[in-house]
Image (cartoon, rainbow, N blue to C red; front, side):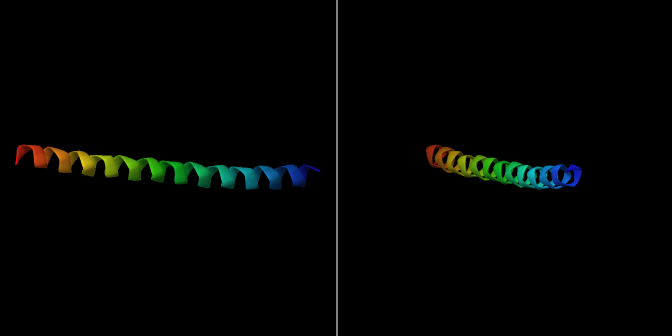
Length: 47
């Protein structure tokens, strides 16, 4: 029974870690995308 709990927790942890890294990547991509848009907007405004 203990083995099952350990395996389950390992699977859950690896899934959780993958979800976290995916989320962080998405946030980083969104941030850089919005920064690009903002930069475009400001350069257009200056010119």
